[in-house]
Figure (cartoon, rainbow, N blue to C red):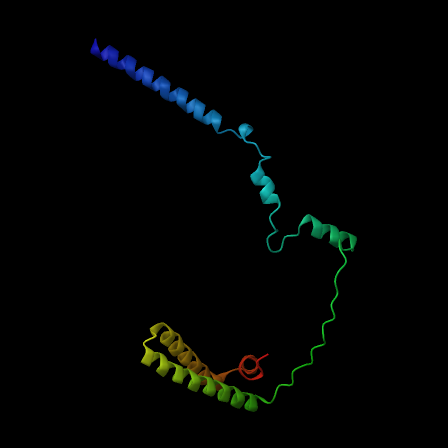
Length: 156
């Protein structure tokens, strides 16, 4: 008799699990999802990712007219930079880096005396970077040399 009662209880549990399973699958259909929510409107108003054009960009591009008047400001013409010879550029960069290295070494000594180890660490890292740049200067290409010359000598 107890076997029959156990079988009936198992059948009731199994039928309950099946009914729960049906309800869960019915709830996950796409028919009940509201696509006109505030979140989708918010996502539509976000700026476009790089490379994508928004609706306004397409209108401007297709009509050839801009929506608002462009404020054209006069930009002064840039004069081309006259670079010195590579040999002179190397000397100028090396002198500028040496002066900066000397200044940083005095800062390292000052931070060491004060016990400001955070600033000491930054200054020592910069000294090492400048020392490595001076070493690399000997084998540097002309374009890389122009970049360093613009950064350390021309400073513009």
